[in-house]
Image (cartoon, rainbow, N blue to C red; front, side, top):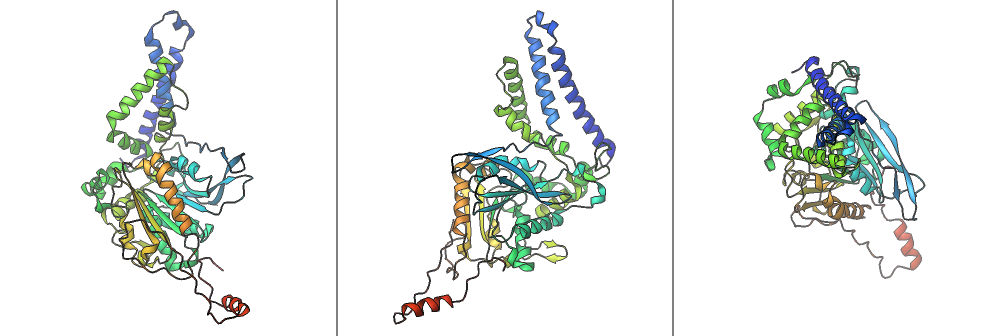
Length: 462
């Protein structure tokens, strides 16, 4: 499979289907055919429209589509997307709400690199924008990155996160969704040891495989069944001549999409049949539920081969994060080095990608963090997508995450005593009461003595 011809063959098949759809739509729309009221003609036109749109979306990066948001002043404010840090394999971008006073909350969303673009978190970004300054990692399609840019594996990914966190500063609240959760945890631990002043204020891990063996799913079973040699032979290809990354070894997005679709083939087949019937009857629209979902779902990107293979080998098979044995740039990352960053985990009870137990395992690794800085939430009835972009996120999880951020917005003057309560229940940090001045002290003396008290450590750089 590791040949350019295989990659180009898949692209040829995609291109051919897109052309067939466009041709069928154009042919069935020919005015002369309207003389015969045959419903088959309308069906062919509908099939062509759905087919052309579907296969065209597979090679197009979706737009963010967040143009404006309402604000407290009763006006809609324009939202612009601005690069903050630009790198070959991914950028850190900001959603700047123009004309609005800057919000106190600063959120850095870590988007997954698992076949889809960062736009998969569009609704997550839109839900946070009214209450926070939002930044997100925008990963690039590997097929568009020249071989001269070098490799990109999970260690490089972790170092990218380290640099992004340094750029935003210690008042940042990091939210990692799905696949990057273990690497965001590792990046925070790396900073805790190498540059403590650059650590984020809070870290929220949503549905991530911190310990894949904590609860079995089809994803973890697949990782155990297949050998690395088999995986490399069946999943890795070289980018063809059409793209800038010609010759780069990748896990192609089209191959990933075929795997996604095969997991629920019957459901996807019915969804497209129903859409063709709706188009035939004139009941479909450009932004109807089907198109909104599949325009994003079908838009896939290539991953570098070294990133995909190292993820499977080191996170799923080797369990390096779960065993606290992860190494970055020749240095062992000790997760217990995190002692001041508040950490919260979020899981869905019906998550079939990262089952309950995989993400909350992070709290057991944080042996240097007091229980008052740990929290977890299990959303009943929620699946994988719902815990970061669905109704469960909007109605229940988002408010809890914002409350968690606010509860840890200021560092306490004195460390709160550790509670004996289990670390899998939500716990908020409590401010320790200030010591009162002695009763005999005069008012001026009291103010003076308080001014000489030892300044608290806020975690901010000087």
